[in-house]
Image (cartoon, rainbow, N blue to C red):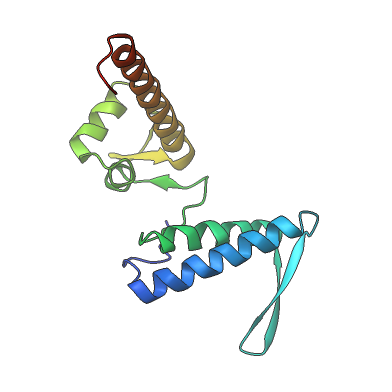
Length: 148
Protein backbone atom coordinates (compact mmCIF):
# COMPACT_ATOMS: atom_id res chain seq x y z
CA UNK A 1 0.00 0.00 0.00
CA UNK A 2 1.31 3.41 -0.93
CA UNK A 3 0.75 6.17 1.59
CA UNK A 4 0.47 9.60 0.08
CA UNK A 5 0.02 11.46 3.32
CA UNK A 6 0.13 10.16 6.86
CA UNK A 7 -0.69 13.46 8.55
CA UNK A 8 -3.79 15.60 8.63
CA UNK A 9 -3.59 18.76 6.54
CA UNK A 10 -3.36 22.03 8.45
CA UNK A 11 -5.99 24.75 7.98
CA UNK A 12 -3.92 26.58 5.35
CA UNK A 13 -3.45 23.39 3.32
CA UNK A 14 -7.16 22.56 3.67
CA UNK A 15 -8.16 26.01 2.39
CA UNK A 16 -5.77 25.74 -0.56
CA UNK A 17 -7.03 22.22 -1.32
CA UNK A 18 -10.65 23.46 -1.24
CA UNK A 19 -9.96 26.28 -3.70
CA UNK A 20 -7.96 23.98 -5.98
CA UNK A 21 -10.63 21.26 -5.91
CA UNK A 22 -13.32 23.78 -6.82
CA UNK A 23 -11.27 25.17 -9.71
CA UNK A 24 -10.31 21.72 -10.98
CA UNK A 25 -13.95 20.58 -10.80
CA UNK A 26 -15.01 23.66 -12.73
CA UNK A 27 -12.37 23.06 -15.41
CA UNK A 28 -13.22 19.37 -15.76
CA UNK A 29 -16.90 20.29 -16.09
CA UNK A 30 -16.19 22.94 -18.74
CA UNK A 31 -14.06 20.54 -20.79
CA UNK A 32 -15.76 17.12 -20.63
CA UNK A 33 -14.09 15.97 -23.84
CA UNK A 34 -10.53 16.80 -22.74
CA UNK A 35 -8.54 13.58 -22.34
CA UNK A 36 -5.44 15.24 -20.88
CA UNK A 37 -4.17 18.48 -19.46
CA UNK A 38 -0.91 20.33 -19.41
CA UNK A 39 0.18 21.26 -15.91
CA UNK A 40 3.14 23.49 -15.14
CA UNK A 41 5.23 22.78 -12.07
CA UNK A 42 8.19 25.05 -11.39
CA UNK A 43 8.54 25.88 -15.09
CA UNK A 44 8.31 22.24 -16.20
CA UNK A 45 5.36 21.11 -18.32
CA UNK A 46 3.64 17.85 -17.45
CA UNK A 47 0.89 16.17 -19.45
CA UNK A 48 -1.62 14.38 -17.19
CA UNK A 49 -4.41 12.02 -18.26
CA UNK A 50 -7.99 12.98 -17.32
CA UNK A 51 -8.20 10.05 -14.87
CA UNK A 52 -5.27 11.50 -12.92
CA UNK A 53 -6.97 14.90 -12.82
CA UNK A 54 -10.19 13.36 -11.49
CA UNK A 55 -8.19 11.49 -8.86
CA UNK A 56 -6.37 14.69 -7.94
CA UNK A 57 -9.71 16.49 -7.57
CA UNK A 58 -10.99 13.73 -5.25
CA UNK A 59 -7.77 13.88 -3.23
CA UNK A 60 -8.09 17.68 -2.90
CA UNK A 61 -11.72 17.35 -1.76
CA UNK A 62 -10.65 14.99 1.04
CA UNK A 63 -7.79 17.30 2.06
CA UNK A 64 -10.23 20.23 2.10
CA UNK A 65 -12.32 18.24 4.61
CA UNK A 66 -9.21 17.90 6.78
CA UNK A 67 -8.71 14.20 6.04
CA UNK A 68 -5.38 12.43 5.60
CA UNK A 69 -5.29 10.59 2.27
CA UNK A 70 -3.93 7.20 1.26
CA UNK A 71 -3.87 5.83 -2.27
CA UNK A 72 -4.38 2.08 -2.65
CA UNK A 73 -4.28 0.26 -6.00
CA UNK A 74 -7.54 -1.66 -6.51
CA UNK A 75 -5.63 -4.93 -6.94
CA UNK A 76 -3.69 -4.47 -3.69
CA UNK A 77 -3.79 -7.03 -0.92
CA UNK A 78 -4.10 -5.68 2.59
CA UNK A 79 -3.10 -7.03 5.97
CA UNK A 80 -5.85 -7.60 8.50
CA UNK A 81 -4.77 -4.47 10.39
CA UNK A 82 -4.82 -2.30 7.26
CA UNK A 83 -8.27 -3.63 6.35
CA UNK A 84 -9.56 -3.10 9.89
CA UNK A 85 -8.30 0.49 9.81
CA UNK A 86 -10.08 1.18 6.52
CA UNK A 87 -13.36 -0.20 7.91
CA UNK A 88 -12.77 1.53 11.25
CA UNK A 89 -13.29 -1.74 13.16
CA UNK A 90 -11.05 -3.74 15.47
CA UNK A 91 -8.70 -6.31 13.99
CA UNK A 92 -10.40 -9.17 15.95
CA UNK A 93 -13.77 -8.12 14.52
CA UNK A 94 -12.34 -8.11 11.01
CA UNK A 95 -10.80 -11.57 11.52
CA UNK A 96 -14.24 -12.79 12.66
CA UNK A 97 -15.78 -11.45 9.42
CA UNK A 98 -13.07 -13.24 7.44
CA UNK A 99 -13.47 -16.55 9.24
CA UNK A 100 -17.28 -16.39 8.84
CA UNK A 101 -16.78 -16.03 5.08
CA UNK A 102 -18.36 -12.58 4.96
CA UNK A 103 -15.25 -11.06 3.37
CA UNK A 104 -13.11 -13.22 1.07
CA UNK A 105 -9.41 -13.56 1.89
CA UNK A 106 -6.37 -15.63 1.05
CA UNK A 107 -3.48 -16.85 3.11
CA UNK A 108 0.17 -16.12 2.60
CA UNK A 109 1.74 -18.62 4.95
CA UNK A 110 -0.06 -17.99 8.22
CA UNK A 111 -1.05 -14.43 7.33
CA UNK A 112 -4.44 -13.46 5.98
CA UNK A 113 -4.59 -11.07 3.02
CA UNK A 114 -7.69 -9.22 1.86
CA UNK A 115 -8.05 -7.84 -1.65
CA UNK A 116 -8.85 -4.13 -1.57
CA UNK A 117 -11.69 -4.66 -4.08
CA UNK A 118 -13.30 -7.29 -1.84
CA UNK A 119 -13.00 -5.01 1.18
CA UNK A 120 -14.63 -2.12 -0.70
CA UNK A 121 -17.44 -4.40 -1.91
CA UNK A 122 -18.14 -5.39 1.70
CA UNK A 123 -18.00 -1.76 2.85
CA UNK A 124 -20.37 -0.64 0.10
CA UNK A 125 -22.83 -3.41 0.95
CA UNK A 126 -22.62 -2.59 4.67
CA UNK A 127 -23.19 1.11 3.96
CA UNK A 128 -26.17 0.32 1.72
CA UNK A 129 -27.69 -1.92 4.40
CA UNK A 130 -27.21 0.87 6.95
CA UNK A 131 -28.90 3.42 4.69
CA UNK A 132 -31.81 1.03 4.05
CA UNK A 133 -32.25 0.39 7.78
CA UNK A 134 -32.12 4.13 8.52
CA UNK A 135 -34.70 4.85 5.80
CA UNK A 136 -36.95 2.19 7.33
CA UNK A 137 -36.60 3.73 10.79
CA UNK A 138 -37.42 7.19 9.43
CA UNK A 139 -40.47 5.78 7.66
CA UNK A 140 -41.66 4.08 10.86
CA UNK A 141 -41.11 7.27 12.85
CA UNK A 142 -43.19 9.24 10.35
CA UNK A 143 -45.96 6.60 10.35
CA UNK A 144 -46.07 6.78 14.14
CA UNK A 145 -46.05 10.60 14.08
CA UNK A 146 -42.89 10.76 16.20
CA UNK A 147 -41.92 14.19 14.90
CA UNK A 148 -38.83 13.15 12.91
